[in-house]
Image 1 (cartoon, rainbow, N blue to C red):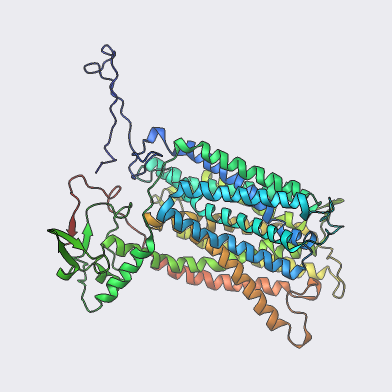
Image 2 (image 1 turned 45 degrees about the horizontal axis):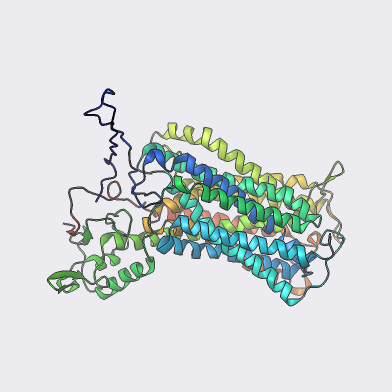
Length: 608
């Protein structure tokens, strides 16, 4: 097996005898990557010819264009349903929640086929093509028969009725968009990280920076959608907005394919579910066996496991170690060849992969409550803003456009962290060159989420003071007072979601990297569902005895601030639980560089 750390490449060129070469040979040394990545042809990747920021730039711009396309549909989808398809507010909100949740659940599908069969490049290309197809179908259907008569669907006029076939085509289009974007998103982040060799200190630092710039590109793309496209769509130019989204998605796909020759790849590791099931079954089958406290005499092989690095034995979840205990009956002899029953004996690395997943779950569960806070930006923050004074010097500010302050806060803080905060913390600590660790950043994100909910609740208290109790007229309090709560959510995003991307990507086993990124998206998905559940329970409890409840149709009659403070309390409790889980967490460790040792042959190793 090739040693990627010391591999060099010699190129013989004739006719250069006078150029300080030996015997007319010009020797060009080209270093291979140390992490085992390969080029598009399956050969070991050469550092100078692949990956790095040149490949990363293609993917960052791709992410910005794809995000612009996605939010060009998502940001005003609820208005399209009410104005064009004439759904009532409750049904429209419910359909948007289902669609949004489905987008993020499809991320698990994309992660599975990427890690198991297709690899990240092929998965990204295929799902982006599906994404473009859905947007084109939506644009054509809107132009031909949905937005009729022309110009309808603005604030003043509704569109005409539609047939079941037309509505069916619409839902086919938006769920193709959901499938394409959901399957693509977790893989593009991981594929971008693949372009940087984590075994090289310089590229390893660039890999950390990539996640920050990736999230920045995502927000810059959504900024255009939330401002420019939202303005045109709000004015009834739906088909134009959707065609712009389709064009942006097509440009993103072309740009992605244009960087093909520069990308680094990792071969898919195969379906992970049999590997997990084998560990559980083997451990249960050997439940009576004792495991030595030191973990000695456990089964391992010399080669890389399923395309990834070997993972040393750890002490947690020791009941799973029984799957790696060696017994004579685990081996069979056929044609003078030794065979191992994988349902009776598993490698240490295979067992440790399952342990990694179990260790990640408590951290992941703690991020769901944060996603509940995050989802309020697209729902209750907008409703609160619509009930405030939205004009500033005769200029009307759409309530949904206030999310631009969240995006600006994200962009500003990412640059501040990269240029000032991380270097400062690194100098003070003199240990971690990254500054705050991923777990620490996620904890800080929870703290800022609590502050955002307290700010939103405080603004709501003052909004009610400047509103009449029995009328539906907006409060005279300016919508600009919402800027702090949007900015605080933006700050929390940088710490939480960028930290999540780095953490789950870095701590997932090599064969499950895209699954790690998908965990971030499923957290947002479950946050939507949990938020809907909490709202339902709150309204059920607070609307008894004829009371309007905390979140009635007319917010002037409700107590929205109490709901915000409830979320602040829940997030505070979640923070305490998170700190306990983070303190108990043990990071994944890998054996050596690329898990390769030149002095070993493929075979069985017993840890003694």
